[in-house]
Picture 1 (cartoon, rainbow, N blue to C red):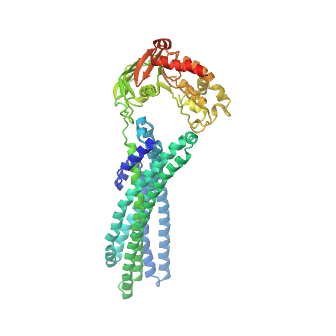
Picture 2 (cartoon, rainbow, N blue to C red; picture 1 turned 60 degrees about the horizontal axis):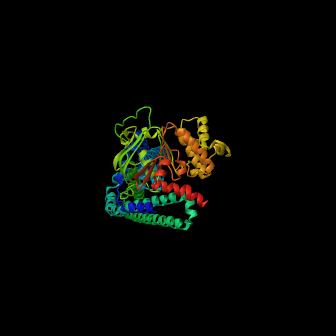
Length: 598
């Protein structure tokens, strides 16, 4: 809920007035396809030119209607040839422009996804994933419409407008001059209502993104929503945001409709008035009927192009807003950056981890310290357990080791090298993680385990599953290792998900192993089997175990007791129990009071 409120506030703070100049940000994606753009433009100029020639043929037909039949047939044949050329050019323009739009939008989607998939967790503290997905889908669809259609239509109508105006002038300077008198009257509503349309277009897209974010958040946690009978509230929240999106869309549609109606009415009113005068010129013999017909056709073409441009203008405004939103993602600066010249880890990686004078508070909670004066050195191959009450900083230590965040002060080192001096990919490939809430992808069991090491063979995958006490239940699935487990592993139990996550970490075979409540979802029998696997796996590896259940950490080489982000005690299980203090109290609660309660 807090993230939703923050997103609403951020959306309200955004500047609403945008201009078409934002579409220029698409040039880097258009530039590689200049040849395709040139061909599209050539086809567009061809169709516009042919359209402008057609009225001349019509004039010839009208003026020579009573002359020889051969001449009449010639003009009609020419008109048919022009129509065929127009059809061919239009089809070619559609094919080229549509292909260009699809190609550019595909590149744009890939570029945005490539950017956001590498952003640190702090980025997603500020922006909901649903809104990011909305930008990748809805906003790029708008841009596809513009590149694949609207820009082409706009350019074609601009050519017809300019060419038609010139040919009108050549046909009758007098009537053209009268037509031009109404141009300022037409431009005023376009400029006035166009600014309002820009604001409403951006607002509409913002609310659509917010709606997508709300839906994504609720659906990804649907079991929790249902368990707390929160469906009605979720429906109401989604409906409220959706209605706001509809209200913004309704205002945008109404504004655009009014602008279109005003422009078309003014244009055609002026044309009718001018034709009225032209009709009297024909009666007076100062103009031929064919010339008037030619002028009428050019007038209709020019008027139609103005009307089309007023409609396309709204689409361009929406695309400008969509482009801006995508550019925000592409230009977003991650708080976690790789160095320009990263250092190399020594080979082989030993797995020594050191926290030196670390102070850290999460960006979303800058006033609440997660780690304070934190000092810790873990030797290569050492098994260290982090214990303490909730909020003590255990998971924060795991996140800093992976450099999802940087400390506010102090430094975290791997094999003596500060993490900010290393490429994130370079050191993360030497770390295996089993999180408390395992992430299972909508794929087969085999592919979920292979996520730990994509090049692993099927035999290695099965070996990792056996070590994680997962082979037996996997073999019992309908298609064994090829069984599709559904979105977020919905077909698996919590313990089964956890064992697949452990198999994934075992398969990675990294020198540093992070176990964040890795056995929290397992029953007692599975926990013993997995614990044995973890004991074997941790041999020769630096292992950091985060646990609330102290039974899982008794065999650790060293236990670090945390409270309020500080190290308050260090030692083995027996030594800490004998020492008294926080660990002894936690042990008593779990091993003594728990037994008594049973």
